[in-house]
Every structure is written in structure tokens, then in C-alpha cells.
Image 1 (cartoon, rainbow, N blue to C red):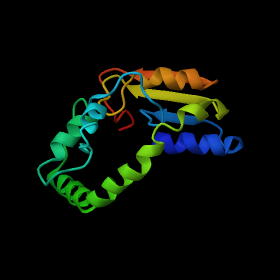
Image 2: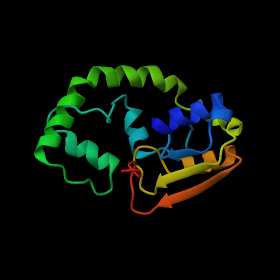
Image 3: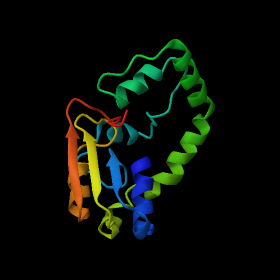
Amino acid sequence: MGGFFAGTYAVRYPDEIISLGLFDAAGVMSPEKSMVAKMMEKDENVLVLKDGNDLQRLMSLLFVNPPGLPYPLKKVFTRVALANREFYEKERKEIFPDFYSLEKELPKIKAPTLILWGDQDKILDISSVTVFEKGLKNHKTVIIKDCGQCAHA
């Protein structure tokens, strides 16, 4: 969601932005649906942990090769994610109506923009890149091979 928020900020305050990075960013309707988008059509939020044993499934959606995490970190990530599950569900329902709103606003972004995408992103399909490229006047695109949603990690 960070790219979506950064892009929205760049639209609203173009004179305050020197440069912009959109890393596997939400905000546009991708020509091809991602694996996760197809799953979400069934009204199942696959980006929220279901229980204490679900972290590996979520990690496999984010990474091509999920990093190994020490047990204490897994325990903390899982505990926090489960404790915030209700918030994440509410967030999805409140943000989803505006999820594609950045697309029509892209021409208002003045700052040079880096579009960075993992070629195997399961969350936001790589076909989104062409939509960003069409809407942005000043951009450079970098596609990272063998990379998922977490290109920045």
C-alpha cells in the first residue's frame, strides 16, 4: 500500500515531491489479474493470517524464495498479525473502493518516478507496470528477475 499512498501524495502535493518510487505499487487496474486478485474475488482475504500456523503461506505469496526467519521473529510477526486481523479486514473494506483511483491521477505526477517491480509478483500483477508507464510522463522502469511482491526487502 505504500506506493499507492506515495503516489496519491505526489498527485495532491506535486510541488513537494522531488522524486517518487513505486515499488510493486497498488493504485491501478492491471490488465491481467494477479493470483491473489483471483483468490480475493472469492471474498477471501488471503493476505491476512488465518491462524498461528499460516505465516509460511503468507510468506510464499510475498516472496519467490521466502527468507528464513528465526523462531522469535516468526512468533512476534504471527502474534501481531493475528491481534490486528480485525483492523486488516476493516482496512480492506474501506480502502478497496478507492484501490484503483490513482490510475486516472497519474498524469498529475510531475516528479521523476522509478517503477520497480518483481517479475513474479503474486499480489499485484506485473501487467500493472504498463498502466503506470502510460500515465506517468517522467519514469524509469526496473523489473527484478525472480522476485515477488517484496522487491524492496
